[in-house]
Image (cartoon, rainbow, N blue to C red):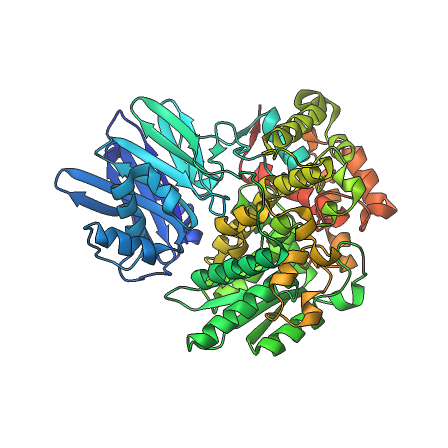
Length: 614
């Protein structure tokens, strides 16, 4: 994976802006520690940071292809998992290749098919291409938004980058946040509304969208979205096809010129990926796969079973790595490390994020990076197969809001009266929820119950899943580690989207159809283990530390967060007996301790990024 950035303007001499382009490119150096490149040719300035995974010797970017008077240039972040098939087809069509890298395959695909090349790609990507024939820049993002792409269109200049920090280097983009941005931070956060960049004049190209920019203006369009249609396969056919799809997806994503490891939590999703990878490595005569897990000091002493996390992970991790005979690496962190990493994880996101859930992942990826460059991870299975509790609890299904954020009243009360009046938080949240519901592609003939489950699936795929993909991209690339997410393969998502709920829950179990498809691949006890989320610390020292941190911020009148918040309410929450785990904030991983950590991240972000509120 890599980092991309640049700007396009039709007037002026961009060669005078080479230092600006270098600053923008270097701001995302963590995404590509193996190389850097810039290219300026009016009207384009492209910058790239490289993490070498495929053809390390020849894949430098920006990549230029010149055919007589025609010039094509690309900066690209991502991976094509069908690059070999595309390359074979392009060779049959008369093209010749100089490298083995998928960057050249993507650029030649564009030369051959133009913007329609998107329909042929299987992968995760964000890229920009200069096309001298059409005199336009073409930008696109993968179907489900695994790879990020932010942009700003100001005074006729288009500025883009893998992360907002690259855009903020440009003088036309300022760290200004208005009422919508504050509503995103306090009512939606740590999620974001699709396309919303929080900073004024900053947007994100939505998943499945492309953009064309020429002298006539800028046009954004959707090239892919979920489509509802009847599911024709019976239970056995569905099981067989799903198994075939998943195995093909994992095997494609194991292709690399550097070793690939696996993140193993002992749960269904990561265990399945690790098992398929082990089978593939044995079949192809490759060396033993390395697996990694994360835990926290004294977590076994403080863990308490609850509906979101019914059992501890450690015994199951041991069970799986012994079953698969992997080379396993146990990584453990303590409370002070998690606290210290909160600021760095905020810088990696350019926004307040998932508190210790982000911080621990960043630390985890930094440790993995010492021995590996590429990993596979189990994100997205719960969103597409319906694994979360809110798919199965009637109260959460009928909450009338995003089910991972069911305390809007408490969230609004965190704001000062003046900010609350300016932001109108309940109206904002209601509008964003209504927009999401209105997007759901209806299937005629479905019962109200079937429609309800389709709606919940849509919310999870388009609103909750991007939060976790955003987290995984920023924290992994923040450590210079490429993490691939096989469950986001668009073929898999398209197929599972239309599987009826009665089949998805085969055997009367959450993710029942996935469990059935994995029979024979996983041991029975692991296969039917209750869901367990990404591990977080249960140490009470963490709650104590983050409460002290936020109270210290409130005691400092110069803290930039103070004019925005209801300090009395936050002090009240900090002194409450519910502050440990009964205080809802976001999803299954963020409760009281994470709320206080999140507010500390907000304060750090406002200060470190010199954010102006207006």
